[in-house]
Length: 300
Image (tube, rainbow, N blue to C red; front, side, top):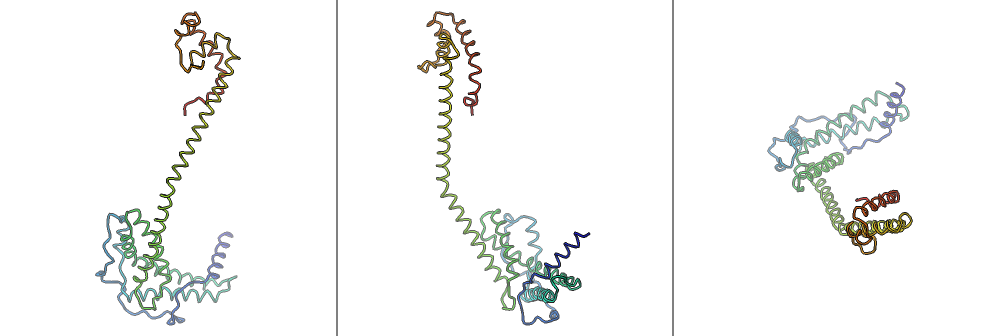
């Protein structure tokens, strides 16, 4: 309970301290302006262009079809209401004691801001088809379309907050310019990024080739050193006859040629079976010597 009270106190202090942005108008007074009886939404004859169902997700397509286009008078009324509600909320905020704001005034501020958020959402929904149309014209794939549409929505909300309805022109004109300008910047960044990645490809390939060569050379050096160590210690572990048989059998006699048991038996005057037995016995002696080198000779 104490924690909740502290959080509520912090939220109230933050709400009282932060200025609420709005577009000022000389018609704003202490009470809300009268609203004329007018048609807010268009008769749907106006279109921002067809939407490609292949590029538009079904859920998004459904949302776009449900959105209604505003008339010019409807735009004017909703933008006036949005900014007036924010104006009234900010006027109340300015009368608050930041350290200990009055609860009744805070509740009224929250009501006004909630109503303003609802009006803002209505303005955004009515403009979704325009954003989708611009994104569709500039995109080349479904993924790019979805990215552009998301980027456009961010600009849409920003544009709603910055649009001065009192200047007398359509929000759609203002929004089209804002979204197109932003998406052209996104496209430019994408192109620059692609150019950088393309230009780096030869460098990356060269670095990879160099790294592979260095690894291969290191592996060859390790095998060569391990082999030299192994051969140098054969003299310490085996007698002369065992050395002769092992070197001949595995091509370690300098010739690089592997000899059969029969070839070796003819050279030293022993039977092939006896040569095989001596070879196996010699390998057993060398087994412990070879264990530390197994990781070097293991296949990668």
